[in-house]
Image 1 (tube, rainbow, N blue to C red):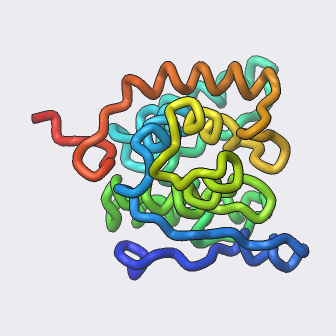
Image 2 (image 1 turned 60 degrees about the horizontal axis):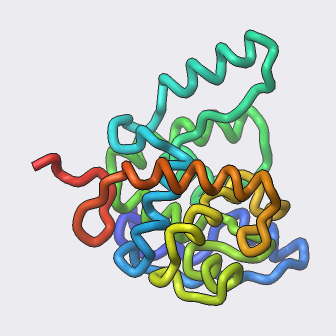
Length: 204
C-alpha cells in the first residue's frame, strides 16, 4: 500500500538486470511531468479498455484464447494493471506460479490504487532498453529530451517497442516498428485524459 503514494525505487527485474551486468537508468517522474502523448500512446498500445475494466480485459483474454484454439500462437492479454503488478512485485521468469501471483496481485492493486496511479507507476518502471527504465530515462536515452518534451511521434515509437524493448529501437526504428508506431499514434488520438494527465477522466 505504501507504493500507492511513494515512488517505486527499484523492481525485481531491475535488480536481475543489474546482477547480469547492466546499468540502471531510472528517474522517477510524476505523471503530470510526462508528455500527454506518451500516456495516450501507451494506453492505446497496451490496454485500450484500461478505463472500463477492473484489472482484466476479459474480451481480449477470450480473443487470445480463441486465436490459440484456431492454431495461432498463444499471446498474452495482460492489462496495464496486470503488467504493473508483475513489474513492481514479481520476479521476471515466465511460469505458471508467477502468472497466478500476477492475477492475485492485480485484484488488490485495482482496489487500492487509482487508475491514475497505476498508469503513473507503470510508466516509471517499464523497461525501455537495456538498463533503461521509466519514461524519463527512456525519453533521454532514445531521443535526448525529457519525458515532458516527447512529441506524438516519439511517444508512439516508445510505446511501439514495449513488447521487445531490448530488441527494437525507438530512436532508429525498423519498418515493423514504424508501422506499429503509426497505428498507435492514430489510435492514441482517441484516448482522453483529464487533469494532470490522468486517464479515465470524468465524463462530465
